[in-house]
Image (tube, rainbow, N blue to C red; front, side):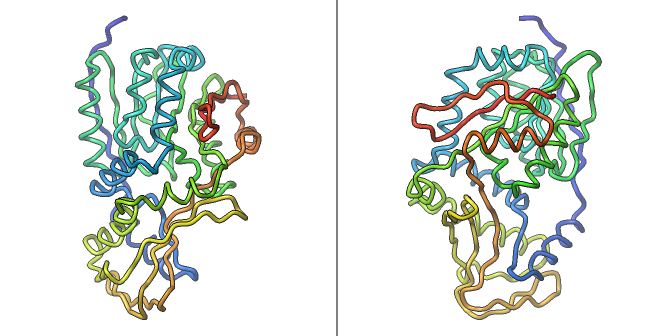
Length: 321
């Protein structure tokens, strides 16, 4: 394996705190109330999500990881060795570890909104792979896919695992993939994990683990608002509520008020009725042909799809067209 000069670089494009306040207040003023799921991922939230991925009920992480391990050489051939590998929403970069040795990318660019968590995890990965150039970018990748380096002559591939694409409304998912298409260029590609439609019992259990970790993850959003915006949410007065909504084909996560109450957020009074919810996340599930058509609308053509034996999860590689 050829050796690269080891490098770790960090670029902070994090949105200002005022954006957080604005989006929270706008979301809580809507009917029904809503908060963007990107705000789950402060350092505590990112850690809780890692714990969710280890619960017995949450199959996507272990299933996708097994798909990558079982097909890593074929995946590396599709992506092309020596690429610039960009991972929006990288989290702890766990899944990319299974790819790096086989892929030998020119460089790896993790992108995440959680600054402290990103710095810690990206430095850890750079230490594990001293031959790899790591360029970490703290940014809201749902707003901008601008990246600080475009190495000349190196093709670009985006890696978006974990079925995070399901958090977007379908139209927004297509728009996001169009942004990726613009970033990777005409010879680039997209390796993306997608959760499949399946038995409703499996889906509901995955978002309501017995240990209550998903509930803590959901409620941590209120803790973050309390800390950053001087709010006075009483976490004991709200409950985690997640279920599969078969019509649109999505899991919905909500925080349900357990009483009539008024919460102050950034000096503004926000009333809640007993039973009223804050809609915090959707996770759309797809059939294979549905998702291939969505990616096609974004400027990609399906190259290869890998799937587990049970058909729970798919890993797609799309080439730009």
